[in-house]
Image 1 (cartoon, rainbow, N blue to C red):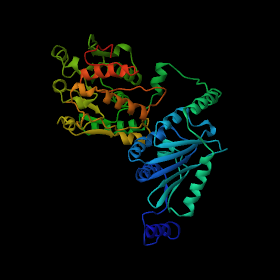
Image 2 (cartoon, rainbow, N blue to C red):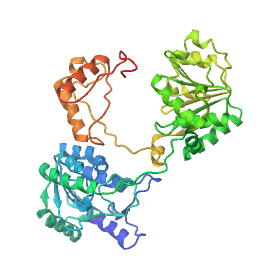
Image 3 (cartoon, rainbow, N blue to C red):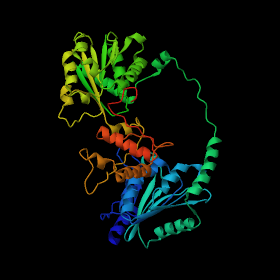
Image 4 (spheres, one colour):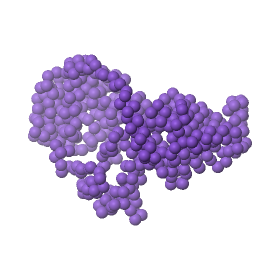
Length: 486
């Protein structure tokens, strides 16, 4: 270790061309989204292999803490503990984040009232050495992943002066700080809310509800501009089909509306698999295309506005023989299918084979299927545009999110899956396990709101009942419920 450390320090502080290179070279840590480099990556690497750790950070957010929660839970299982020193400087830290910190049982938290406390340091103890990450990054998601930050990562032997100085400074402030307690949070919350209420909220003026002005104001975003050019290039090359692969939330519906506006069809057909989507799609298209109300029609359930210029239909309604064959095969010169990954079903093939549009567009976020249906082949492998989730996040098109993969409970050594007996799916142990994870990982906002997908109807009903008995407000929704109830 000493030899490797010496070589690393020589290369880092004396001569970068030093031939011997150890594994502990000092490193500047920055957030470089294009090259997928983040301060968080190095922090998690050190956290996962350390024996203990101390953080001294002025600011902590829910998002920043969320990036560590799974790793801290793993450390708890290994018996690894840590300490976090923070404060209420500028009333930045929300009361909720302090309550989230209390949930992490292997981390002790203290609060200092040291004036101007603004430190940002992370120290990790290993066998005979320490790793240090010190610089500008607080424990916030933006500071660890997005902001322009400078942090230096250093390695020191346990007897080194630099790590001893860090330890001494930390312990000195730690001894004079107060432990985080629920009672303290309740008192702080009153002060925090008073500070928030005293801030002046700017008034928004000049907002127009004029639909004509709104139609003129809506413009394609950067992704949509590129996509529209590529779709047009496909058409100019003589191709009659195009597939858009676009992550959920990136504006596929608006993109298709912009393209329809550019194509200017005599009639258009928009097909979806759920009736709930239709009215929203129709509303979005009207914002982009303009026109009279009677130009936009619905074909679903009892609505049969089949003469509309822009027709929005469910696959269930339009695939019925008595409905489908009312239309001339060339009635629509532009047809779109939303969520086209479902087009392997017979109902879709029936409609696709019947109509003869001038241009046929499909849209999906998930073209890779497990049912052996080849969506690419359906569109003659003409991918008009593709933007995946990671790219959409990097382009700042989507709200960043935290995803936690939670292992299900094993029941008497048996893993839970879709074939498990109902009695085992709703045992008290499994319900406790779910509630424990909900509470540990927390939620954004004032209260937990969510969806639980179940393997079958009876599981949904039994699980809802069990959760309601534990104080949650849940309802089971299945295909047996009406559209209105759902």
